[in-house]
Image (cartoon, rainbow, N blue to C red):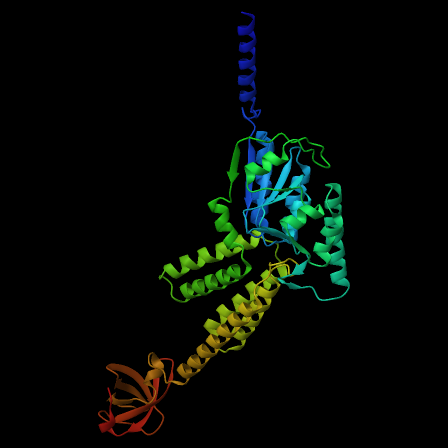
Length: 435
């Protein structure tokens, strides 16, 4: 009876906790494996930090971040490092599978983890900061950026008991080493063939600086990869794709405005612009660049209605400048390709020159419709012009005024000009009547 009351009390407490929304830890501890197998950007940072939050909420035994990355954005890297440093549970980093690498920002994330490991045939290093995929020009700016990165990776390595000297050389000299060399130099703690092997070797170790003794051998592993919706978002935040979507969307919307009722171009254009703006909202952008893009697009649309050329070419130049300034050029990989900008500007410029030339030719042609087409035509007098009367021309009777001598009925006249709906005419041979 005593045990039954105790069991009943425990069940009642669990039901009460559930009713209050208090999370209940899993019956068996689980190791959450988070796959980071692409560039580090706002999307992957959101994914990794979200997984760390989920692990804390559920009470997972540990998180293993499986890394295969070329690096990425400094701001996104900082988010991940701050999240892993703040956890109360151990965060392990593991460069895997064989053939994977941890470069640039990936090295910083590993130095900030509680335990670092690599598969046998992997490498780590090359953490020198770059801007927009190119080396930073020599000077005070480069010294400032490199010194900041070197100090950051040095303190991460030191506090986690790793080789701070090599970590700093990865930043200053782009040093890169194999897994065996990393273990020998004290850059990592373990070389493992797979995640279960990593957990087995990690068992019993005490992490620095958290001081957690690991008890992970044999625990079930739950692997999490980037979900489909984030994969799509990861594609949409590409700066080159954002620029192309924005420009293409505006062109289709302009076509819809010029040809109302077609619907499909306007719908597709709207979707493309929304996707571009969504991508812009995710990555750090410049308001100056965005405003230049909008102004350039507005001038190009206006050119389609004006047709003089100046507005269109100015719009092309502003659009190209806006695309160049749209994203933070100090962030690695976060910049629109200059060749793409130049190619787009040239194509748009040639397109507008073609439109301008065609517009000029059309303007030089005589009018094909409207009252202006009556000028130069020959009509027949149906009521004597003295000086006013009626003239039959182009299948219609018109009020007319003779600017010369009176013209009797049946004679021909040539139309010189129009004033309102009144024709001003001169005598002409009747055999030339074209009505």
